Length: 444
Image 1 (cartoon, one colour):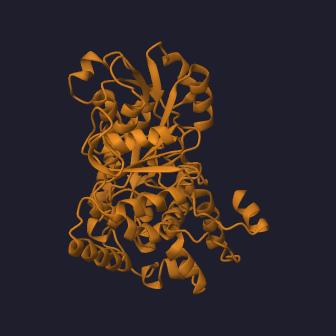
Image 2 (cartoon, helix red, strand yellow):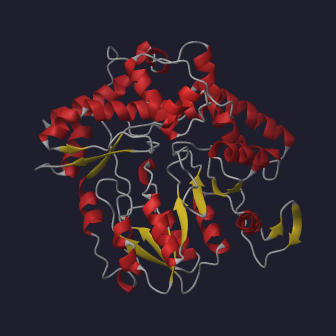
Image 3 (tube, rainbow, N blue to C red):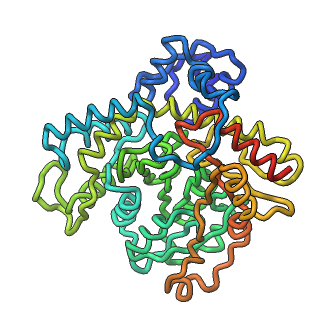
C-alpha cells in the first residue's frame, strides 16, 4: 500500500483518501504508529490532535457519543450541526475580518484559498468559481465544446452535470453504469462514440473514484477530452490524473464545502487555466478588471467572502475525512450479516473513496420505499436517495426529443433499490448505532 511505503520511507502523508483509508485501519486496531503528516493547511487539525497524543477513537468520537447514549432520532443531514464548535468559531472570526474590510466580492482570500487547494491536490492551477455547475460550464467553454458536440455522461448524477453540458449548447449522451460502483461503465463508451463526440464526463459519484484508467485510454484512442466531475470527491487520491480538467464543488453539504455556493476547476494546463480565469470573470485579463481579452465571460468567480469561509474550514478537512471514513468502515463491518443474508448490498471499503455519501441497496423481497418509510416511522431514522429522478426520466421536453430511446438497465435497476444512510462530519456513534439497529429490525 502507498501509505506503508510512505511509512517505511518516512515520506510525509499528504492526507488524500488513500492515506485516510489506512489511518482507519490503525484506528480500528488501536495501534496508531508514529506518522508524519505533510504540513499543509488541510492537515492542521489532524496534526494538532496527533501531537497531543489523542489520535484515537475515544478522542475522535468522545465517550459521551458511545453506546450508552440513546438517540431518539437520527436526521439524515442536520443543517444546524454541519460545523463543530471550533469550526464555527474560526469561521466567525474570518467573517468578521471580511466584513470589516468591505472586500465582499474581490479580495485576498480568493488567491489564498486557491493556492492551498493547488498545493493539497498537487495540481498546478486552480480556478475558483461561484459553483461547481459554473466550473463545469466554464471548462466546457474553454475547450470549445458547444453546439454540434456530444458529451458522454451518466444519467444518475446531480442535474448540474447535464445542465452544464446543455448550457454550453452540447448534447448529453447517456451511458449506463457499473452496478457495483454506480460510476459509468467504460466498456460501453466505444458503442456511443460518433464523429460528434468531443468529451467524456466521468462522475466520481458519492465520492467513489471512477475507472479513470480505462476511460483515459479510450479517450486518447479516439482523441476525446476527459473532464472529471469530482464535485463529490474532494480529497480523492489521483484527483486530476487521467483528465484534462477536474471540477470541484464547495457546496456546504459536500464532504468539504464553504458556507455557501462555490466550486473550482483544477488542471495542469496553463493555457486552459488562463482561459477559465477569463471566462469566470467577464472575459477580463487576470488581475486587470475591465480589460477584456476574451470575447465574452461570465460573472462566475468565487466571492472573497465564500473563499474566506472555505479557507477557514480547510484546516479541519482531513480530520473530518478520517471521521467520515471510519463511520463508513463501521457501517460496512456492522452490516455484514445483512449482506450475507442477501437483503442488503454495501460498498467496498477502499482508499479511492471520500465517502461524501454512504450508499446501500435494498435487495431480496424488500421494497426500498417501504423500508425507508419503516425506518423513519418506527425508528425515526431518516434516509435519502441521491438522486430521486434520473436524467432521462425528468419531465422536460428533452424526455421526448433527446432521451426517448435511452435504455440504461443497470442505472435503472440500481435506482430502484438505492438508499443513502446518514453520514456527516458530526454524526455520533450512538446515532450510527440507532441506524444499524433500525436496519436490522426492518430487514431481519
